[in-house]
Image 1 (cartoon, rainbow, N blue to C red):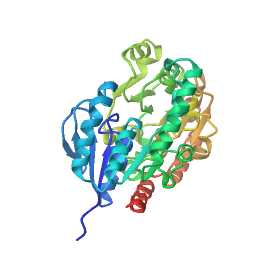
Image 2: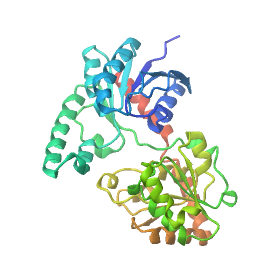
Image 3: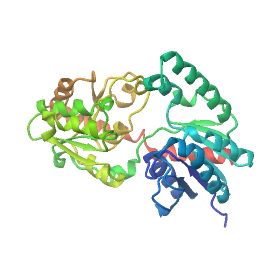
Image 4: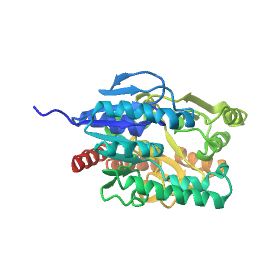
Length: 368
């Protein structure tokens, strides 16, 4: 009997329960017959979960300097000791580790979750725009030079993947696990009267807009927020809104519990502010709502329309009034709601992680 191929995933930045890394990539790979190890840096100890061996190198996530000076060294020692068939790393700051692994004749894949070059341009705290442009250009050259030496590159949307010059590259979009969501889907007439948002609770993701909109939403409906606030100050600001009395905040939830919560909701929200890094991104939550048959109110971004046409009400963001109007329209238009819900269910199968997992398996084998 052949020994299963051993894949080692590496991250010093993401949590061990990261949806893309753990629940999608690692867990699905064990089901496809791989042996999977995930090395993390959160100080929560080693464990085996979903048949994934999780190795903890200590809590390095909160201090960038400590991660760079000591965390990467510790991670490399743990990784090389495993002698895995392939190493799959997820953080830009681990590019030097990828290079060190290559020098040890290992097979290495870089998974780029975000357009870092573009993000640098938008981070005003890094300094004047002219400096950010220089820094972005420098990082772009550095990332391309190192990634070209890897055995493969993965990213989340084609626009990022195509920026790389590595001949072996593939896009794995953050589509949801359809099977898990369908198991917990609730019929329309039994769903709770709640409007749901799942994800990071930040101002640019429209959280305060949603809360303020609740003062104009049909009585009897609540706003369910699943996730953690970006800061204590922003949490306090939200709590001062008149709409807060209609909010149910349950904090961060494990994936299975989060699915049960949003799958029992009436309308989903994804009205992000028009930040440039959002305009050509894909909202994972939008696909999750779709899989649960939940119509969504979302930002009218041109990039989003082909994916969510007929499954969402598109509005101009940063407006509580627009959000409330769209929510009330879906609440009061029963035929429209039912039609959109059916179209969500029909369209969801085109955007499943199950198909992306097969692409990842094929990609690994093309390297190995």
